Image (cartoon, rainbow, N blue to C red; front, side):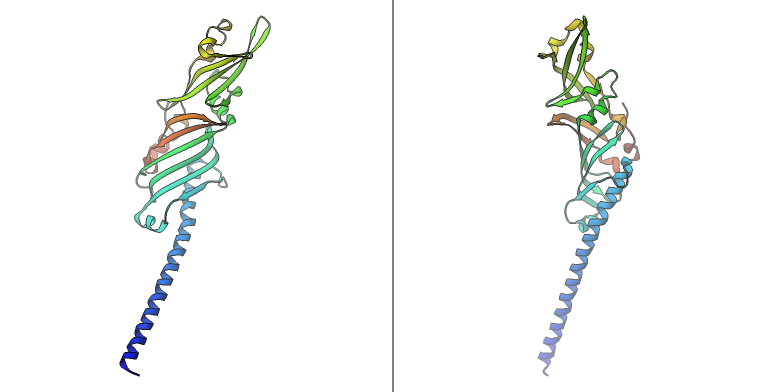
Length: 255
């Protein structure tokens, strides 16, 4: 055997060992990524369930974008999405979707930012509006772009059905319902035309209704917009990223 042949065989064995090591490392990385894909969403799911006092078996979908291992090494998750249906916090209920950016995995620093969307069915909206004194919440419906309510008035022994459509908006974080139009019997009229009609019996229903929901939600949430889309009322919130590191922001807000 020549020296040159022995050298080639040694190099060949060395290359084979290197290839095997690379394959093993790649396999370990894949396994670690798969494990992280199971563990991290589970931890987020558990934290969300605890914060919202949800049953352990309540479905919560968690998505984390990108490859997890590099994010875990840096200590920050780039993009996290959490969604769950039929979530109720006091009288505020609906299907919830949260998107957060720059989420620290240790919870000792604020996230870069977050938003939330809550979609309410008419039934869930009735539960919320029932907290307004004197409002006929049991009759509430949705007819885009308005929230509707109905009732009856008695005049000279006659029962007259009436209805009012309210335009929803947000003012200083509160929900505001502003009368836009209405009906008397089968006739459609504007809210201004309704005022003063039927001896003023409808005037109390034609006032702007303002509802503060901050006391039912974590202080980190700020209502930004609200609109009727199809058969749902959609509310959008900004979330202070400090909710992850500041316990005060997880406490209910104030009205």
